Length: 314
Image (tube, rainbow, N blue to C red; front, side, top):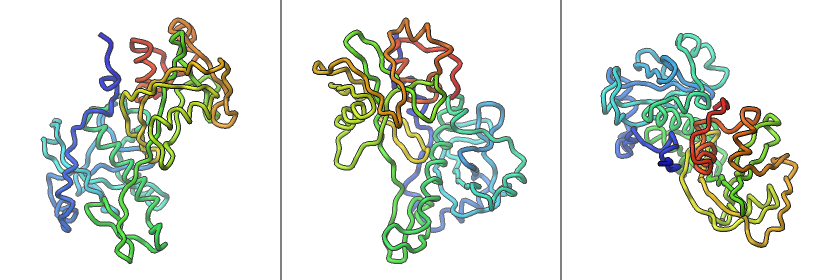
């Protein structure tokens, strides 16, 4: 039986208890930093310490310098040989030039989330994605968007407060990604201006203020391709912390009123191609598809009806 999109997505299962109630403890971070059972996930520019090829290396607090802000990521729901269920995990970021020396002194091997996401356990993937996303937010919100004044960190690293006591919370940007099929059940793939010329993926774009997800599907596809679509159907989601997106996966089919012409917008999308399943198979491996950790790949394989072995990078 063909797997559902949800079963294909590596980000769906949650093995981290974010433990929201604990964030109200003003001494939480101090207490956990002095707890020998606590562990620290260090992130640096989308990377984290790894052990082997497919596991995060969580460090004791005694091995990591305390660099603010420290974020409480929650407690683990899955056991490993080194961390039992319920292990509290803190996050620290070494991104930026001031911390380059600290990273070198840790003497660890680093792995990038983009490259190893599909290899990680649900627990490690949850922690890694959460940490990268929250520190991306901290890096962009050191100053209040209301007053322009420096903000201070509270609630275990999940809220920043400006001098007027205005609270600022992490934000996620919703974006739709769409598997468009035509009357012959061919799939539409586009090549982005920022990619190699032979890399193709599904069409995607951010949801605008005051817009439904379904309306965003129709608008984005038309803006990038000139194709009218109808019947958007939601299939699943995936956090993508580069820097702060939530990808919402849809299928859609061409509208009966579409005239058959595709028109790449020339800015984001430079080329568009329709593929039958046989045509996609024949185009591999010269054609590069999205990596196995992406919702785009899951949607393509959902249409294809099987896992695709093509050697594409994550």
